Image (cartoon, rainbow, N blue to C red):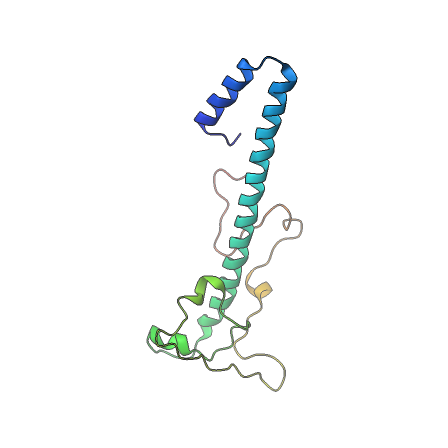
Length: 147
């Protein structure tokens, strides 16, 4: 149920020491509501992390076609178009120039496509019907506990 042993002990103590059934049920209802809020908050945080990871993966996908064979320090001055205005949140600290220099602008091509741009749907394809049930990203496999 998602309760710690201490919480379960307190629930049982309150349950059996309540004088009236409705009072015990009200306390239990309050506990369930609090757990539901906590669970929804955890789900929201997990969905945000999923979005940030997907953005990071899309950004890093263009690095596969990087024409340079320079040290990693040159990545902070990368002019490759990664298909987004700024680096994703999970990469921002890594991609910031320690000397504080600005990154070069990323020019658009005359045909409207951006050089080196890889669309997210080109690397991650969610099978129909799995959007709501949760999907696996690149490299994820079904585990023994998954059904």
